Amino acid sequence: MDNVKKRAAELLKSEAVKVVIGYTMGTNGKPRAAFIQNAEDVDSLIFNAQCVQNLAVYLSKAEIKQLGKPAIVAPLNVLRAIIQLASEMQIQENELIVLGVSPDGELIDFQNFSAIEKYLEDFNMEVDAKEKETLEKISSMSLEERWKFWNEELAECFKCYACRAACPMCYCHKCAVEQNKPQWIPVAAHRLGNLEWHIMRAMHLAGRCVNCDACHEACPKGINLNFLTKLMLNDAQEEFGYTGVTLKEGNLLSTFKTNDQENFIQ
Amino acid sequence: MNEFEPKIVAFVCNWCTYAGADLTGTSRIKYATNVKIVRFPCTGRIDFMLLLKAFSEGADGIIISGCHPNDCHYTSGNFHARRRWVMFRSLLDFMGIDVRRIQFSWVSAAEGAKWAEIVNSTVETVRELGPYSDYQKVADFLKTEVENG
Image 1: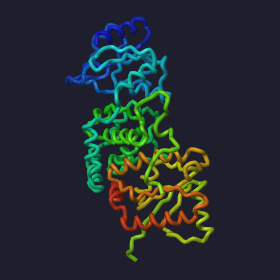
Image 2: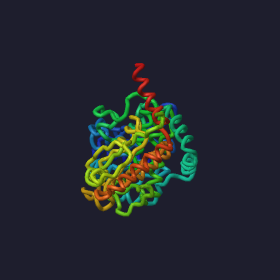
Image 3: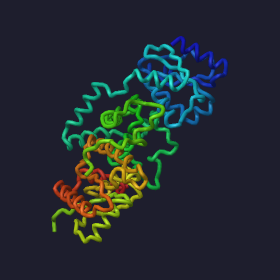
Image 4: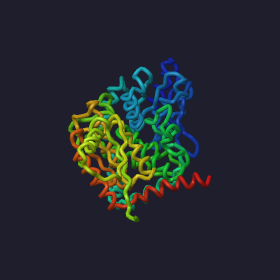
């Protein structure tokens, strides 16, 4: 982490960047995001296993953009989000400096986005074995049990949209849930609206989700809503051979192959 | 007349299935009257939210139909739709929504008889499944909440 701090200080001193987005210690021993604008403050930067928030979420926020060019402390999840955002034309190479961080906190230099893409090839984005087990456990329930399970799970949701705020891929300036002509999702937190919101969220993230679990971490009710996006990721891999974030291949649902397979269309 | 008559909403594309359904009519083929057809420019335009809206507004079953692969008027709308349906269907199934109530099909403008078959078989399937009261209960929950302020 010392190298990261050193580089951050250099960048701020030379005014190559105006702000460094990183992690610092928050209250109750839980890390939070830090926006460091002075070189002398870089010592407050930290990195450990508890740094689970996906900092890439700030790259598309107007409040952060107005601070000036950012450098961003980027562990694996953030790197993936950066590449996904770049593939969706949301950020460009010259707009930010990426301070890659290995799992043990060492600085990784990336010359450009292609270098990040190449680095990511070594890390599988698959849903891990334990999570797959959970997916299978839910899938093996009867239809009624699944319906009951998700109704109960989502009953806790009070539509605070923290999952949306924490997600680097939820960057729309006007989200469909805020549209009222037509009103796609009822505003109140009741069963129908909760169900529809979580279906819509999963669908809008299908093939785009970087599997960082920031949504689940942000949820004040601890709803396992990330298993909906994990299912989508798993399906994308099984059905369409999706391999993870790439710069050029295009999003899963905005591309197609003429020989895509299905077994339910008559 | 206590027998349950399923309410089916069909989302169809303008160029193939809608024309196909037209042909069913001009060919004087009789088929179940339970279906309400909503015409779209293309299957690629059929937002998955519309399916959820159909269920919450009281549909017991849904038909989605458009041009066969390679026949899309806009060359690729149905290919995009196919991918979306694969994902959407899996998600609904995972969440306990009854995907047997949603019939996906390709019906071309020349397949008037196939359209009649699709509608008839869907009506029969849904008739056996009964009213979609599970989803209705959730949707009605909203209505009673609104009515009671």
